Length: 399
Image (cartoon, rainbow, N blue to C red; front, side, top):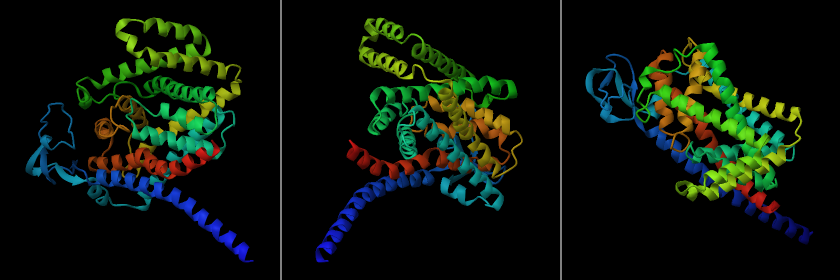
């Protein structure tokens, strides 16, 4: 009996020790994510509160015809101004929460969950079932976590390949999963834009207030350059993967022999290898495989773009949900080329510019932005902090 008790106590000690090794990194990660959230909630910006209700007036100091709500130089004290300086925390406190608004926010949370569920299912399909539901969950949230910590223009694809590889997937298949995931995301966008243009029309999609607001260029020009690049990228990857992978690699190597491009040749070699590996992995896949993967992609992205509509509906009746939904596709290109992690800063300015004329209660824009960022950005910081330590230990043990 004494020996049994001793063994039991030893097991309890080891179990506790292992638990601490997981909980300590989780606590550190949660504190870091919490600090980032607290810092952003404490940031002050100028909120539109209505004519004569504020203490500042907008003066358009930078001449871009768009209020930069975070720039103090854009506003001057005024006894009868339309703007008031408030922290994000104060903005949230000023909201009159009702059961109606709570229900819409819960629907926004459900739409976010649907988005992630679609991603999880797609990863499982693309792995041919080699990744379990739990593994697919880990890969999805760690991938989103990596994307939240890197500039949008960089993305988390390189890290995603490493994550999938640690789950026991061979390099060739991991490369194929990441590349096809990116291809399907872009393909959804390429297909959706013409549908939206046909349904809504182009007249109201590009707010004039945003002209010259980003990098001194008209927003329509930025969109068409971005959309054209995405179409070209999809066409090249599709042709290279499914038709001529070796020819694509040889073409790249030939082009990057030029003196001014030679420094990037090693990276280009890897791109060519990735395309060839992906092509080999995907040969002979049935139509059902592609149909399930692309259906999951459409489900995820449709849910993703629905979140802002649902948050806005929590505060007031939206007159044109379709236009609000369509504008998000235009805004997504701006966020895609953002040089900041998770699109921070650019996302807030773009949001105010794209949706200002569609939201009747202008003073709620700040609150909507905060709630949107909580579901689209901070959620993945917190989830990543929880998932990463245990996943790292488990995959290390498996290795």
